[in-house]
Image 1 (cartoon, helix red, strand yellow):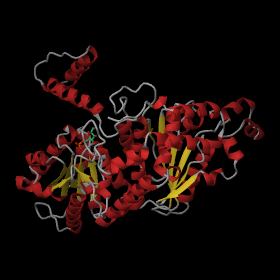
Image 2: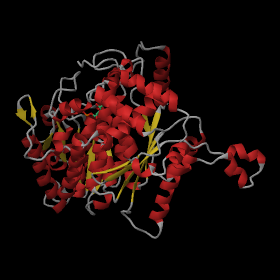
Image 3: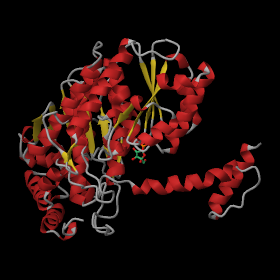
Image 4: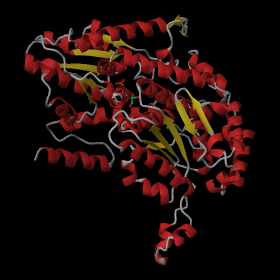
Length: 545
Ligand code: F6P
């Protein structure tokens, strides 16, 4: 329970509402014209990131009001509560300590009177030993062959994080070990992933916090069958399967050796977990040193978030700017646009991080939230591909879509002039979105009259620009921690529990009920609604055709 006053009844909220009414029609052109140094002033450099937030429909006064709101909800205290292990996941009675996963060994963070940091470091050490044995070839498959394929089997947080990070750091990977990620219960995912793998050279990392997730367990059983069909000896399982879980009993039941299990803890949320043992496949791919560099990046952003004044605090700034659009401008979505192919999966990863965390309509006191919006829809894909797909709507559609542009000064794959061309698009898009093209400018180009209205670009479309030198393991850690904390700040202001996900449970329960109805030989008595009954009947007829 929290004693937060209803958000919209706070003076700070009302002041923002008033400020919105007064400033909503100010154009970014006017903001920039009024202050020639705006682009330098509304920017922050911290950790290894440069955030330019000047192309937002706000002034320094707006920011001050937003910061007052953050202070009013006691953001600093809420942050400390998270970092120090208070049980802020109130519906599950758990601490929220993903930050402990990257805490230095010297730190002391207690849950129920027990310092969790030594456990974190013990598991990290176990991961280091195991991953270096796989990388060096010392760890062999059952028939004595080297491991060349590592297949991560998991879903949600047990898939999206390691898959995104593997993709992001692919240029650092071991050249003879290929990682794949199987998540979907659709057999196609598994079948395609193993289609060109030799079972004798394949290691499965079964990742599941609960070790009860239907998709993961189904895929894991298929993987075991696939292995045993090839090698024909159950003893092979211990050379080809390891598990990452909080549930040792279920892991053992599956047949995976305790020694081959890497623990994590109920105080790590699935979507906040890829820097725990859930990142084992990643560590095998990039090596323990790179993984450590990544953890150092996480740590540096944690430190920045915990200590920097709000007006220079990158996660706080991004969160408050997001609140400004979500709650006052009524923006429904937020686009993440990385100008780096290695970050192709970042929008999908952030979708879970943000939408599973803040997709809530009941506050921490159990009251229905009617008066304000909570989490936005997160979406996006890498530039420049997105430019040729959906940017048209951002530029000229009827919706307001705030965007985060993410780019780097140096390419991981320098080739000819590619990188300058890529980044010129980044800069050009943020410029075009903000300033558009006026009727006068269009007319002065001598375009036919009938085209003029179609070619006018209103501009005034907001964006944040995040720029860094290069995508490295450290930088990736900083970036992910930045978004973790952004989500935290927004949840803290909206007074929601960002760390549970009851909404996804109902679908799981209903699916389990329907399975026997699809499996049954005899036509079952269906007692769903008429639509679901008809769909199941049609499916039963067609799958037997
Ligand atoms: O989608 C619901 C969810 O519980 C996610 O929060 C979680 O990341 C995913 O399922 C997988 O859960 P587990 O790691 O327990 O298999």
